[in-house]
Length: 251
Image: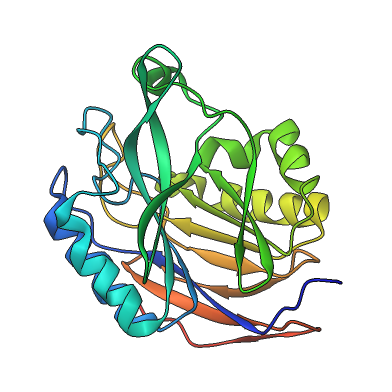
């Protein structure tokens, strides 16, 4: 029997970022979740700490995450948020750049970034490989920033059989055009809509001016909805059959 899907309202968010202040960032994330009232809300890379490569790892059981769990419970949302995480290995615990899934049930590690930059690799280990999660019958392929520009990673994620590709990224302001280019290329490779959540606030590691312009493209690569350069969110309803209905930007 085939999978049953319903329409999926997806939001891509670019919240305020407070360097290393998890509690403040959780509050900003929770406000976005409550405002967007989307089934799936995608946030940028390392969104809970800022793009700070020395940020302490965050456990899914950390009590500071409780307000975000409550926001997801109140709205029925699934939030994909970024944080450094620790995963136990065979001989040791490895640190990763992670994507956490937050929903009414709590917090779980959903994905570990595979394609690390040079500075990231000095601390973090690469994840084991591509991942797709289920959200209401939609197979959602996950990626983080540099993953989106690695053709082999995109192809391996596509091979999982996707209904949607979702990624959190951090780019410099002058790299805005690269975001659009990658979204179109990913749609062509996966045959699925592409949701990119792009940081819009100043953050660490030299990202004093970030790109913002989070977006959702359809499976043909056409832009459905795009945020501006300021913090905020935009949302779109992806139809289970055909067609998408964009809602207005909320910057």
